[in-house]
Length: 252
Image (cartoon, rainbow, N blue to C red; front, side, top):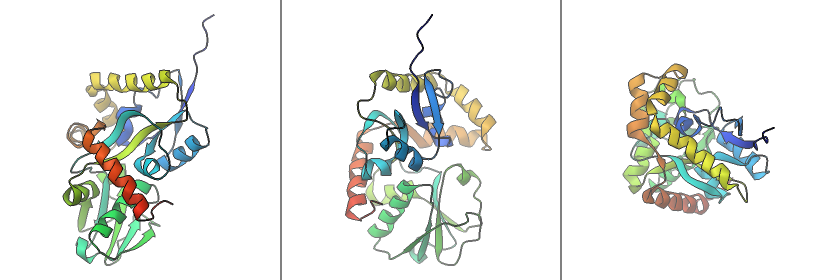
């Protein structure tokens, strides 16, 4: 009888931007997939309930320091799926409705308005589809940005604004693991991504079937918008972001 392979409990994200990191892990017999959003996955990882998880950069900046791979979700200059919607210019924004699903994007928004020396009131978004009040902007993350649920006149790509202000890319998520993470697990994660790199067409076909996004937009998103390996500039961003999160008292 063959020995039973160890099951690794991995925290995985179901967003389109995470697909290259999870596509070849979902069906592995060694993987027990736990699907959720970054904040709950971070809490599970902290409690030792997961071997590893794709966690937000905010979790890295504010709390954890347990990166196990240079695989990430990052971009430079634009991100497409982390946006700020408004019916006025940036200068005219007085209130920002934050997206409860994303601590990283909310922190970036606060950093942007602090840098602009613009006093803004922050409040949670209660309903993504309601019309925007006057002088109010709404942070929206994820796949909904391909079909925004509310009417708007202006939209600002948060990664593009960060690039304009600081000439830095944005890192939105990282693989982090519990203490003493198994080297075999890291190799499993790396090999799964290597399989995607060998056959991007298979991933495109899967995304086109599962997401209501035009095929050209999917290909542009993966080929020209996102990158999945930390660069030196990405590491510079993480240092910058960690310092800003603490300096501005954004550790919640």
